[in-house]
Amino acid sequence: MNKRGIVVALLGGLLVAGCGADNKDSAESTAAHPAVRQADGGAAAPEAAQGPTQGKDTAAQAPDLRVDQRSIVYTGSITVRVDDVTTAAAQVTGIASGAGGFIGGDERQSGTGSATANITLRIPADKFTSVVDQIGKLGKEESRGLNTEDVTEQVVDLDARISVQKARLDSGKRLLAEAKSLDDLVMLEREVATRESDLASLEAKKRRLADLTSLSTITVVLLDPEATAKDGDDEPTGFLAGLSGGWNALVASLGVLLTVLGALLPWVVAFGVPVWAVIHFLRRYRRRNTPALAPQQPSPGN
Figure 1: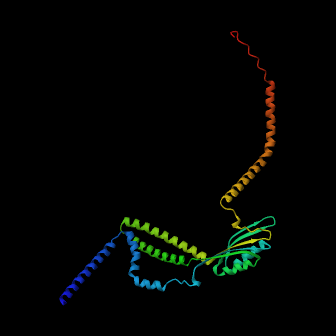
Figure 2: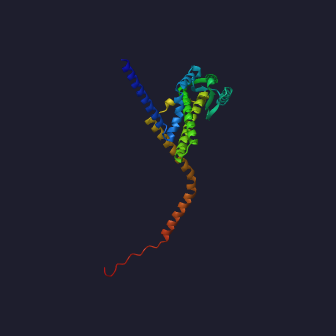
Figure 3: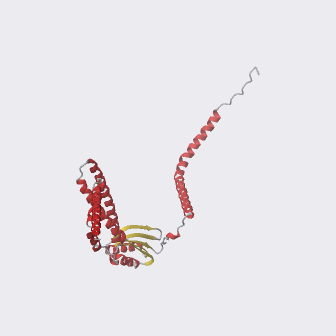
């Protein structure tokens, strides 16, 4: 029994050694791939070599997802009826400046007895609620709408993708510096350019999210006592919207046509009437001076 156990152990050792040799040959064949695959492998190799350690670092550097650390996009709108739109607009500008924000847009309209202002504010996120409350106290608040969007997962995902893309770009640049053939050089240059473009796109998305989370957007509508608030829900849709648009276009076209005719009418009267009189006189003169044709005499043969 002891001899049989020793033989079985020896055979098992030989099998394990054979499997190890096969794995070594497979790794060597993988290392002989083209330059672009080496660029990807170069970025992935350190991660594989540092698998357990990197796992510990990732756990230690996990994103802080507490409520006060989340990335939130704040947007809001408020409509206030005021006694004087111009004065209230100046006060809104002062409130925005005092909160560390700025005016992102300012559109004003004034007519006979009515005036409105549509002002877009960019305010630091931590001053969002207080600024809306201050604006609501400028007059009679008619409507308010506040929205929030949690983009924490998008920010975390972008950070991870940017980190990976930077590692891939660095690996590609290292291989580009070591390229020995023209084919490898051309291929690696194209790959590095693509990775740089992808990295720039990811960083632009991150900057956009950072702008939205750091600065909230508030749309302020100011109305004077005579102005009518616009309600988007009252606008027709579908067939009625098309009919209304077509009718408005027809009325506008007729208005333009009548305007042109009104502008041309004095010129037609000033020049058309004398020209018509001259032409009429010439026709009568020619008729009067043209001799009557003599009747034709029948031929002798007839």
